[in-house]
Length: 254
Length: 365
Image (cartoon, rainbow over the protein chains, first blue to last red):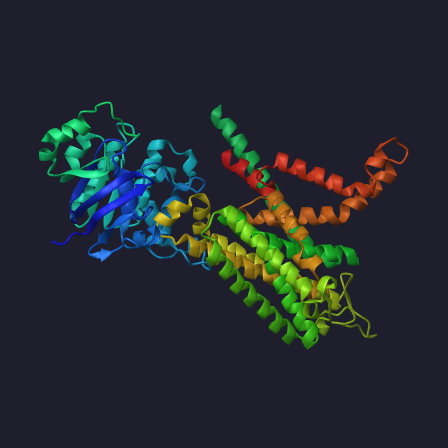
């Protein structure tokens, strides 16, 4: 089976610092890959290189064998790479519904329409509302994002990602900062996407219990380099991993 | 208790909102009936100026308020529309064909120039873009004064407009061949010209209302709020910015055409000058950025202030003639000081502009 997403010798340097160091890896559809590693290991930077917020110094990114290394972030989003951000990264003054509607609108290619009222597209609103129901935000649809709690903003972040209908889902610590009763909603959603078996899911996560229960495969990054890659049980058992990652229980989600 | 408070707050918010919309409606009706309500020539000048500036300010708000683009080249596009029309009317004679040719040329040049400036420089940071537009606007102003064979240089161009708009034209006459008066309004060319400006502005304003309510309108706000995220959703930010920059430029050029037809004179002072750019900025800020209704209130208040504050002060100064100091303070020569003071107070009490602040309070309630 050919990979749905592949990176080859992916490298980025900031001055003398090598943040991501020659990472090569392929991801399959239907597979949930957790990316773990201590803070500063290059997980989010890796995500930025794949979704196009950063350009690599060296190396290539392929989506289903098509090279996308030189595509902009917007072109990659259109190509089906969807990304939820680690730090809440929304449109603060717009309403919750408008935020999701923007994603639906982007997915349907309606952005450039300037001579029809948005309200004339009932399906836009309905679709957006659906995603809010899925993420249990429907009661807050009319509020501005600034009025949402941190947990709700994270949920909205997920709603936006779902609305883009990507084939590659990238979650960057989706449950960080969420309360105990909020996190299961998100994890259930991720689990649902995984059950579909046609999507590729990349998940950066610090919580080992989450990783263990969701992941089909774990990749370990350390100082920007890929140091281990395999089935969860095997990876967690590795002494190297215990050393560099699990050996630091003080490590908290940033 | 809290609920009671809430209802009180939301009902007062409703009153405020009603007040804002009532004021806007009043301005609209006032402008529509201006020839009847204020038949003197000066008032008509003010009314026409308000109409045109509402369009100009609203189109600028599409950039600065909705999308977060700071441009100083808006008067440049305004001027290109006006000069295109003016030059054609001068060279081809006063006909509709001249307006069509000159106006279209103005719109086309504005569009192309906006597309070039946009694509070349909207990817850089806001401050650099502002500098680029400032430079472009200065170049255009210098060109207008240098190519004096076409533009009349600093003196500008005086020309005739189609016969329909000439004051001597009688649209309707009574049995004696005199101009018919409808509700006291002379049915002459001046009135026709006013309504041409009024309805032209109205159409342009509704076009802009439609644009901000469209899917594109939301994308613009998204770009203003979080450019990087808009890009991550799949919106090509540079293209959207360039698109709205072009749209705003073309609308400003349309306003320029109206101005050229109304004034029958086009010169640097009436279209290209930096003073007008500052007026536009102040009007946007006073009315409220990111709300097209703000343009109506901003343009109206500012224009009324610029035209009538002096008269008002003259009257006040005479009325207080017996008192010490006060008549001197209210001397009409000091009108700019008072206008400045009013601006400072407006910005202090309405930090998000009049419409912006009032409707935001309503949203918080």
